[in-house]
Every structure is written in C-alpha cells, then in structure tokens.
Image (cartoon, rainbow, N blue to C red; front, side, top):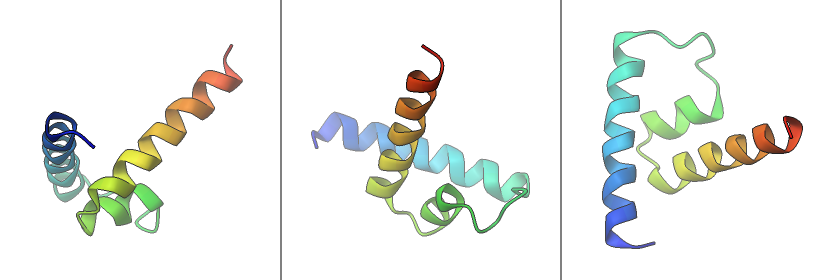
Length: 60
C-alpha cells in the first residue's frame, strides 16, 4: 500500500473513530466499529471496499 493511501486511510480512521466516540453506534459488535476501535487500518479499508463492491453489484 502506498504512503499516500496509507496516510489517507489513517485520516479516515481518525474521522471514523471520532464519529463513533461522539455518536454511539447502533451495533457495537459490527466489524467496522471493531476495526475502527482497534485501529486496524487494513481491516477498515477491506470492509469499506467490500461494502462498496457489494453496493455496486446489487445496484447496477
């Protein structure tokens, strides 16, 4: 993963972490919530990418 992508994902992780601290997620056991709380940048990226791909496949 390139430096720029990694930096972008770390900033995204920070934004998501701040959001989840401010607003309680409805499902605290969600994979994305767990990955954000554990600061797993690679998992956050994989989860978001998979959700994007699933959305595009079902809405084409």
